[in-house]
Amino acid sequence: MAPASRASLTTVAPRPLASPRVPASVASPASSGLSVSVGARRVPGISAVSSQPRRRMVAAAAATEMAPAARGEGGGKPFVEEMRAVAMRLHTKDQAREGEKEPQAPPVARWEPTADGYLRFLVDSKLVFQTLEDIVDRAAVPWYAEFRNTGLERSEALKKDLEWFNEQGHTIPEPSAPGTTYASYLEELSEKDPQAFICHFYNVYFAHTAGGRMIGKKVAEKILNKKELEFYKWEGTLSQLLQNVRSKLNQVASNWSREEKNHCLEETEKSFAYSGDLLRQIFT
Image (cartoon, rainbow, N blue to C red; front, top):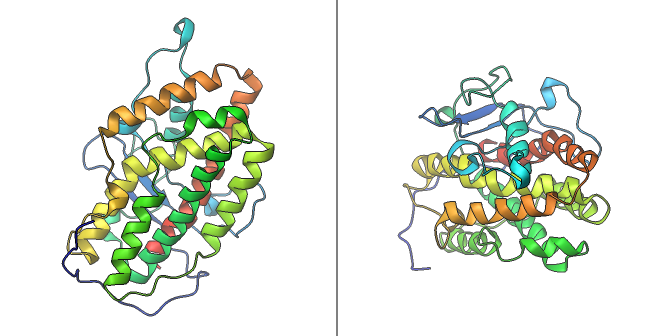
């Protein structure tokens, strides 16, 4: 990575993770429905997520990068399209046509991100992405190997970004509770509940390529002098990388029973909750 000019970073004193509950959301300026939203903080842990509104913390992708997939085998709906539909229903009407949730937060343009908070988010994100990569590399479940080297991997890009922040004089923190809790949960799921694990795999990667990129752009405008981090860059054509992963997901799910597919879909809200915990750190 070529040396970058020093960016102007807002520096604030660290705040405890148990900060005041601050909701936030981002929606595409177009009518695409691409969005990310977070609400009140969930107590760290790996137990089931409550359906109460105060625990609905979501981070999902839609529209361009989560476009409807091609028809499945036999002309039926591809399973990835079912996953997308469930995710879209967790959006609000102003974020997506399919949204069913009531608006509970201001747009990302009104966020006030901090450099310390953003660093915590990047460090925890690196741990989560590295965990996903390690799980598919080990392939305790044989078909996890289908998701190696997809081109969507983010841990190396995040490593470069954290090195850049260090060069600017920032101390890189250790992973915090949102990241370590989520990573532990992913490890547990990958061993005992592969269908639920795949729900997280899909939502983490696809959300980052859509709403995650929009958040990265807005944060860069506010505290990084518009510097684009490696976290938001991919080698090759992103739409094709995503389509390749969709195809693999559909192929793997074609061997699942209807009950297994439903179980995967039921994990979506919990996936949003863990991702929301990570995102909240940006503005705390």
